Amino acid sequence: MEVQTLQDQLLPESVFRFYIRRDLDLEQGPKVRRLWLAVLQRALQDYVTVMQDGAVDEELDVWFNDPSDAFGSYRSICHILDIDGDRLLEHLPNISDEGLRGLRKSGLGDVY
Image (cartoon, rainbow, N blue to C red; front, side, top):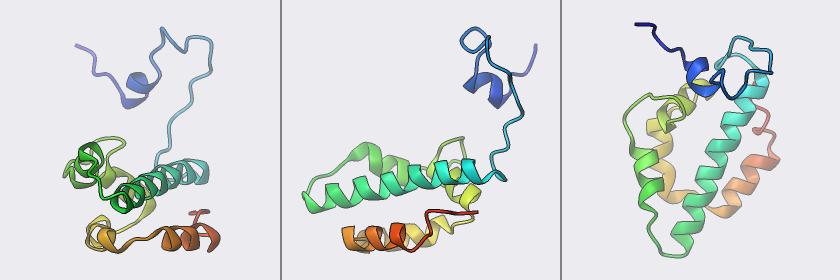
C-alpha cells in the first residue's frame, strides 16, 4: 500500500493535474510563514470579536485547545511561526482589538 504524502492530500492529482508540483516547504519559506501568521491573526481576531459580543464559539475554542500537531492545527502553526503556543493561550483572555491592531502595525506581520 502506498503512503500518501501531505502534498498528495492537499493537491490531489485528479484536481491539480495541470499544475507543476513542487516540494512544500512548510517551515522555511517567508510566504508560507506569512500565510500561517494571517491564519493565526484571523483566529485571534475572531476570538476577540466573539469575546466582545459575550458569545461562545465552540469551534474556535476547540481549535485553540486541540493538543494535536496535525497540519493546520493551532499547535502546528505556532511551531511553524516559532511562537510559544502555551504562553499565547495563557494571554488569550487579555487580547484586545487594540492589541491586535498594534501587532499588525508593528511589522510582526512580516514574520521571517
